[in-house]
Image (cartoon, rainbow, N blue to C red; front, side):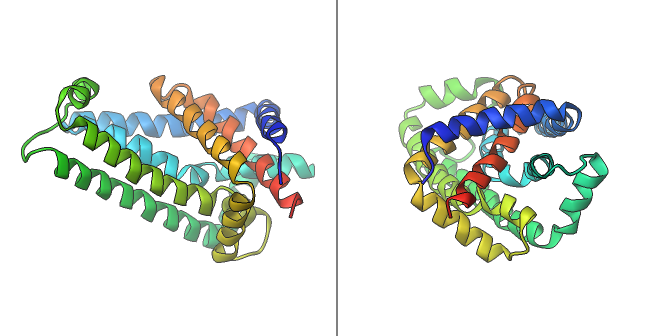
Length: 244
């Protein structure tokens, strides 16, 4: 089993990797922050800005897929291999089959979350009610349906997040490093989370809080948060794999 002290070291190691390759690391962070901004502008432009919130929550379900290039940077740094954009992207594309299968699993979980969030909304709010982005928080707090809506949304979202975290947190880096199938990688990830469940609860909360902070800063914080967490995720995988 891994210890809480090792979890702190994962973040420290992630920080070191980020600044060993700041151009690539922050570049990928900026790319994902830019995608967030594009989605925000598109949704607000068509009057569906309130969907930003479930999409932001859904992003946390597919986080390991977004971090795959950062895992590869850390893998190369650890092994003393040359690091460049072409080599990082090339290695990831070389394993696109199994990584794509893992991405499909995570995408299905994200779609399940979006459909579930719409269903929960429909169950607690009468037809025709919409929640505008600029008054979303006030509307949710002030309406009588709010408590049930928030509780049901939290339970459903939490269950899907727990599944996504368990099957993917160590599966994606394993697929980068080893010639294994997606089922074997998911089984390894689930078993590792089970064996270290107390620490993994804290690790999942750390990932969620830092990612939420990055989004709350108009996505600017994601430029730094995502590389930090991506690199740290690689070191978490290596520690857990070393423990068997």
